[in-house]
Image (cartoon, rainbow, N blue to C red):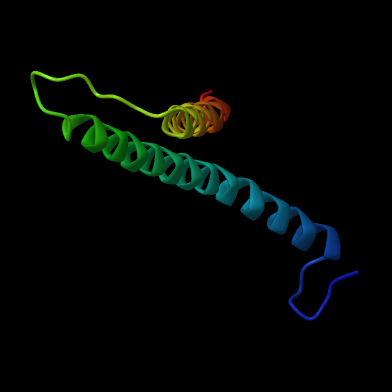
Length: 92
């Protein structure tokens, strides 16, 4: 039975689900780009810390700093892996 738009309800539902499917890849790609940008910022920050040490001296970290560096690097890797998964879902 046609509605006020002259289309049947299943056609409208079908159109909406098609529109959602078309939006999903864009959302995934945007999320992947955001994750990569965040990971890049983290890597640049970590690099800036490492570059503050004098060229002829070691970079010495205290135990708490090593722990923080470990978790920062793990978070960076996790972001990159999540971005990779999102991008892989877009490949045909």
